[in-house]
Image (cartoon, rainbow, N blue to C red; front, side, top):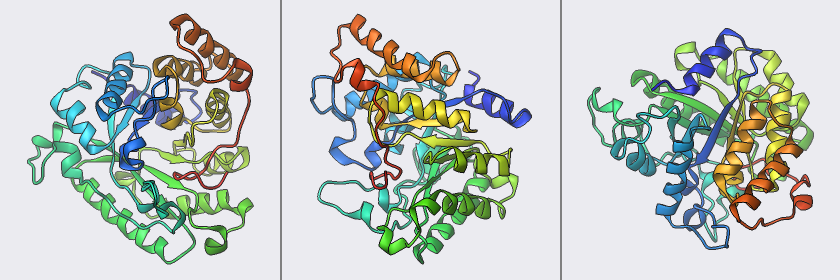
Length: 342
């Protein structure tokens, strides 16, 4: 089965100004949030891990997202054991590292301390579900990973860079593709010392400086960064049109938050969006994804999508958590994984 991700990346390589858009469902929250990771059902009950995986199965079957991002343990079940991606246009992907600022567990303060590099999983385990493994066994699992880094203007940045370099070298040797996620600083402002207005440019400069030392064979297939407004997005996209830039969805917020983020980021150069909590918090995830897809494909404006989503809920008999009026509001979106920095 041909993957829509491969088709769209090929199109963007051929024509960087193409309007094609890559949409991902980020269902890797179990590598960060613990028990609360699966989110809640429309009636407010916490989902179980099996229910969380059921939502992934439904969205993959729907086929409107281009990527399903998972934890390694979930990918073992869905990709290796159940083979649900074999006859699907959706590409399976796995979070390849879990630096410490994504450890959002109850009672912790890791998200408020300068992030340190760490990875629970390995490339072997993502590709084959075991280590060591043969080259043939590598074809059993996912061959795409998300690698995340956070720069805090501190000595810890060097450790972050060293870990990413080691990952790239191993990934290149094992034929493993990846996309790079770069968060805004997660340490308190008084610690990292970067002025708020300079943070988007701090991140942009880190990205282009880092990738200047990476040949095409080892470069990420695309980027995932917080959307920090038109100026920062256009600056990065105009600097190197060969870079495919994507945005992360951030905290849940309103439906309008999600649709507007997608619409605005695409307007200023983004060609990828990864929504995790915004999809997972939806009353009906399949309807929400359908509206995201229509906005991504220039078939709907954000406000239209909000109304269409509520119409779908009404037709399904699912009570909405907010009125249409409330869901049309725009609220602040968190720019770091743990929710800091709005």
